Amino acid sequence: MIERYSRPQMKRVWSDENKFAKWLEVEIAVCEAWAELDVIPREAVPKIKLARLNLKRMEEILKETYHDMTAFLGSVAESLGDESRFIHLGLTSSDVIDTALSLQLVEATEILNQDIKELISVLAQKAIKHKYTAMIGRTHGVHAEPLSFGLKLALWIEEMKRNRQRLSEAKKAIATGKISGAVGTYATLSPKVEERACARLGLAPAPVSSQILQRDRHAQFTTTLAIIASSLEKFATEIRGLQRTETHEVEEPFAATQTGSSAMPHKRNPELCERICGLARLVRGYALTSMENITLWHERDISHSSTERIILPDSCLLLDYSLALFTSVMKELQIYPQRMKRNIGLTKGLIFSQRVMLALIDKGLSRQKAYELVQRNAMKASKGNKNFLSLLKADPEVTATLPPEELEPLFDYQYYLRYIDEIFKRLGLTEAQWKERPGLVEPTEPAPKTI
Image 1 (cartoon, rainbow, N blue to C red):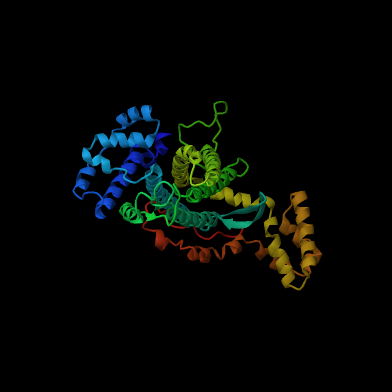
Image 2 (cartoon, helix red, strand yellow; image 1 turned 135 degrees about the vertical axis):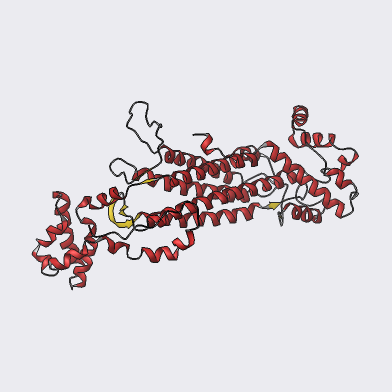
């Protein structure tokens, strides 16, 4: 189970090897900028590009210096000759660390963006297949009026599209470098160095900075991840609710050899969706920490540093995992249209109460009177577990306005699905647009009939 959802790409982004490779990438980009400005010899650059980091040696130096940047620089210097004196020229640690962190965050957003694209694709395929799969809509957990399972999924698709846009905006905020010296004044270098180095790294230079990039950028990124995780929790919670024994309209995948309980062999629990819900709480907690990190003393302290070593990698890893997990759940989701149809009829027609009321109003009754007549019969049907349509037909006050032959057509749930096509077209959810996608199901279900 663990291997099935392992995420090697995101793990690589946050590995020590990649982090320190990014540090070295920043150092080399700055050296190239210095050379272009004729501050260091141009012939030194090819040799500097051969610089390497020995992680084991860095760890040895770290035990002496207790400073990761000086340990890093010491190890890199040992791989060079005289050219090592040009490494870190005019820089402070955060010039390298923050700029390299931005590179890691950009890599992470690209993976997450692809995750979201894959989830949207799977949701679209399911939505199109179940465009006309009628089910009961619920408000306050109580039966309301019919909708379709495809429409429910279409709602999720639009939310994930918004999340993808949010992630794009967060990427813009974080795709920023900072090479401005100890307190942001460029006292030991030049804005031109920052501009040239950032251009090489594919980052925008921060218009102004202190010793660090300001942490509202990182807070925007982490809160965006928390919003996306919360959307997944919302979807997973819906599946959990629909999987309840009393409802049982959908069910998350359950392997043939899987066990749901050590005590009760019959159990098939929505544990994957529950896992997603739990992890979303953790990501939201990290978002709170990221907002706490915005406030630092003067031009910088390092109270944010210790937390970011946890919250940034973990948020990315958790969301990447959760997106993959939920995509897998949706791919293999068991959907039970007949159970949905049965549940629509549980209230014996009460869900058509608004249609009856509106029909009475159309016939000339006041809204208050129409509501009173319909509610009176609805309460009788609810308390006595009786057929709502039969009660209405037996009520002379109702039939005086709406004869039985006009009442019966009102109890058709196809009426509630008559704009489904229009909604799907508005959302771009048509088979023509998705037929080339792998796994697209054949074909959509026919429109439902009256119950």
